Length: 323
Image 1: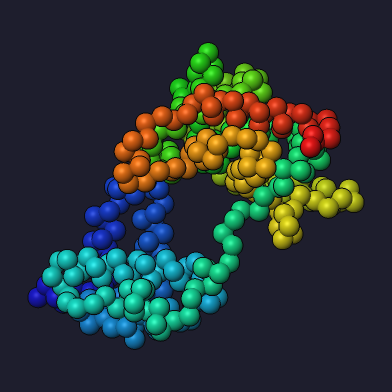
Image 2: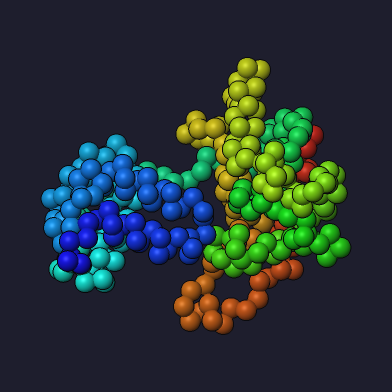
């Protein structure tokens, strides 16, 4: 009987059906792991039409406060699987894993919603202290981090950068839609400082990546820049300084330099919000407005990124930051 299919059966089918549509190849494994760890012991062997709100609470309550991010993902994934079961005619009625208007009446607001999701970032006023220390570091990780800082791109976009995407003559880096969070091509104007960095990168035979790793066809680890910053922080502390921390005493991250850039652009320049947001590859319009928004403001973004590069390189020798 079709309605006797278990939650495990339906979740396996759901994952297989969506696997090819998930951009991140690890996403399917994350789904499998979280459902196996938290959902399967309680509802894995139950037919989907037997699963109740009490079952969902039994799964979520032990981790709701202590593992807020995980609990949120588990709840959402169970909800999607049960929606799929209903679409297949395997269950009827309300979804017991639905949050709004259901579980939100039975569980407190998730701690995930209360805590900040910002990546630890360096205040732009600290660049005059950071850049001279950073310039003493060599290697691929340092070059990747400098490109991350100068472009204000996401670390994943920089690490997977390919020479075929770089046009030094046009001073452009064109990132394919498949590698962008918004699934839309992003053009990055290249400042003179960034071109100098790119021209100094070694070309590795057999690889078209800017930052090839030890494994053929793969870039350096996504932990490379974070570990570099942690080593710099430790060195700063050992030298009697304050290390490289944000206002909450957390070691700064490479992704946090996007916030550094955005704060600087807002407080130290007169560039329009749309220009600054487009430089970060953020969506600046939705719905009907988006239908009329055709320009990517490339030349205005080029001026902005040139100013940012000048600001960063001005501080390479610890120069005072201008008011």
